[in-house]
Image (cartoon, rainbow, N blue to C red):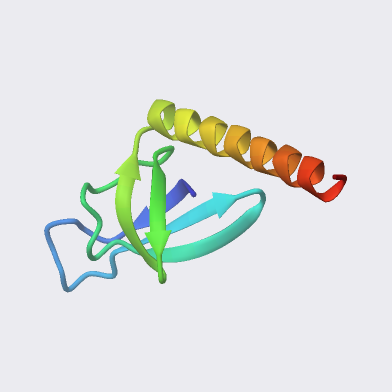
Length: 85
């Protein structure tokens, strides 16, 4: 999910460490307490159970997103072929 806003301080665990993120127009808040690298606006986050666990720079994220879309298309095509047999 793409980081739109960041609140809190990475060096102050008592602050509210939260990011507002977006994917396909859906915005959510996610916790930054355990993320591997503090994100910047425009970075992407891998999120699990409401917590950001990994930060990706935009180039790395776009590559991953493209590859996931390619895999999904291939799986869909394979399933269509299997169902029509």
